Image 1 (tube, rainbow, N blue to C red):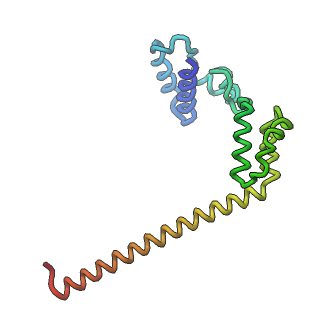
Image 2 (image 1 turned 180 degrees about the horizontal axis):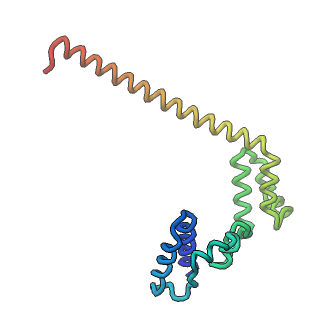
Image 3 (image 1 turned 180 degrees about the vertical axis):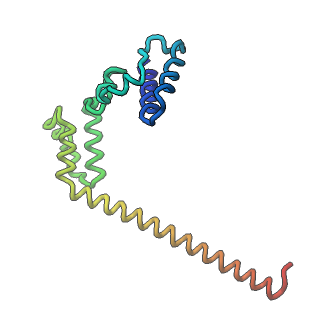
Length: 171
């Protein structure tokens, strides 16, 4: 199966990349021969991996997936959803009504459209993330001061208990 082939390729590539001895890779591959589900899988050696282009590995062992491969094309509804989420996330609600027109204009070049939107609204996006991280930092500081106040209250209670124990003796 395709999934099994990819898992096998990933396992062998990982072992090889981690510097595992070539012999142990050979032993691993030899041990997989005859396993259920491995009947129609092409076995290869560590030497085969040595000289192989990573971009072509996906084509050879399962039909694509290398770094140079094209991304799968998204449907119009997926792109529309992504565009509307972009507008809403960054407070560009007035642009939502024009989402369909934008998709028509950029048909077939949707990824370029998102790149252009990120470039065009860079200032808005930066403000959003600055505000977001300021809120995260404020929450962390509030939590830290709350924890500090709790610690001080616990220390005060313990000090009071110690003072009472010293004054009246421990019971």
